[in-house]
Image 1 (spheres, one colour):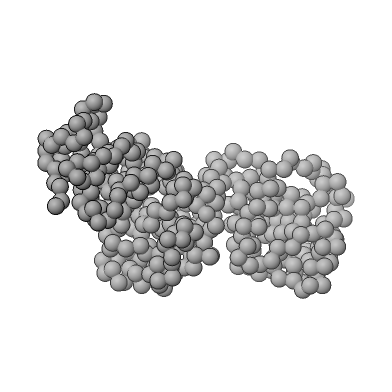
Image 2: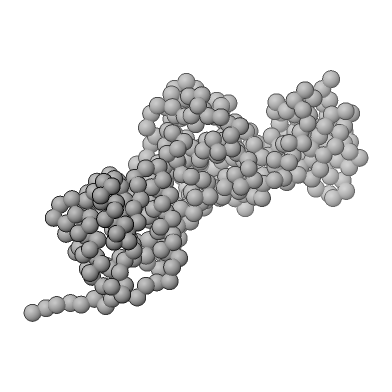
Length: 408
């Protein structure tokens, strides 16, 4: 028999029921008054004992070291039904807040807070599942509480009642696998980034099937097309989050948080300059590497050269700290010739050189002979570029050669 509480009922000798707040599959949530500590609390009372103990739900909230989760105060039983006592969270559902367009500054603050919440949740070994304007509560001091960690005070699923990551729609995701579930959250984070910018999530449609089809098959909207006042490299980060295949998304929420901080720091202009040059005749890859290097660290000032002579000009002009060179570069100056040219510029303050892309075994041997590391252009490339830029940024600044102007 289901236990139902009404106004004035006493639970656990300390809590007086005020009103029902919400219902979920696992229980009914009530607002109650803690008479001992004189504060409002939430009490979630189990309605179906066959679902097992609510201990797991309580521990899940308690494990997350972030205010995106409701605090847990205790557990007990009432008339044979288990209950959890937790923090009473109040506020406005995020989608309502987004009815007015966010300024770039507020946008970045909210996206960073939500990304930090996802990162901290993943650190606790927990995935969220559905993150959207319908499942996030904006509370006092702009606190964000996610539905799955709210004791059902906030909906855990959006209006269509399902997770919309492409791999989930296709039946490819094993959500009991923490790594797979984390990738689902990254996709949802990309969707929220679009919703924060435009007021509506990608592929938003009253017809659930049309929305599902969009997530599974159609290219997502680009943040840069929706909001030209937001940083361009932020658009690239969101595009990475919204990749249809999990393996093509960022490695972790912590990585996304690090890149967001670099974007925000750059906007504030608080970093020393780390000069990076990308030499690549593949225009699309060069543009991707440019954005990736910028997102790796706020200090990174990145330029592109499409061939060796252009690279030589920028090397003489800017004296970069780090140079990524397409291993298959051809033209007037191939990759190896460019490397030897750079080595001859200034032996005391030469740039760090890294060859990337595809190269023959012979070329790789030649790069190894001149002490230049080679990074294969596969799924590990992005992480390798990020790591190389950050390592270089953390090193002491190298002594730069004084510029010489010749006139005659």
